[in-house]
Length: 294
Image (cartoon, rainbow, N blue to C red):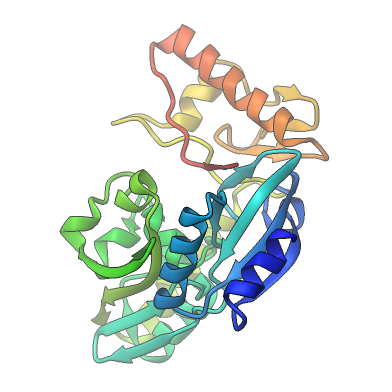
């Protein structure tokens, strides 16, 4: 019995299918395939699915927008858990509840229509609410964790809610990444503002992102060390333009790796090379901002 057939036998109403192509569903555009994927409707269905996968010893990975991830080549004989059916988006005054599968573009459009401000720094970032909460997505001007009141989560057999403090947000990190917890819904606290001011700030961040490198990438590869810029460190080591196979360090922004038809192995080798050279020349070990997929 195929993995997909096992899923459907146990969860007849679960949206699932055979075969998942990581290259087609990630921004970096490389990686192998998975045996099956599944998209639960809500946290309860997800908790049941994760419990089944645990009991049956079936490997799985969580995937949102696929924007800051690097999948491996070859076959992942497991299940890719997707959040595309978790599309809840509702507001009560300044409090907004956002399903894990809601895209950044849809969220910002809804906030702008309600004259709710504070999240404009997310403009142009490829994201879903769940993935953005898990990695505390953001820029110098702000991070999603700054706006979060609470996060609904799921793990094998149970759902629960964490307060902001319990999420343990830090620079591009959180409890969700450390303990492999699945975000199902995020509750945000925002503020009212004038429509013109919201539009102005969104335009500002849109222009900033327009200057970033074009092409297939994972965004910034490394977290900025305390008080330093990862891109400046890489540039200072003369690594702009360095290439391994089809992967290249951007000449425009050294913290971006552009995939020009390469493999995950090319990208991974280039990441390791950058870390090695920067460590040798500066004494700083760059921490990856991206997430590796099995």
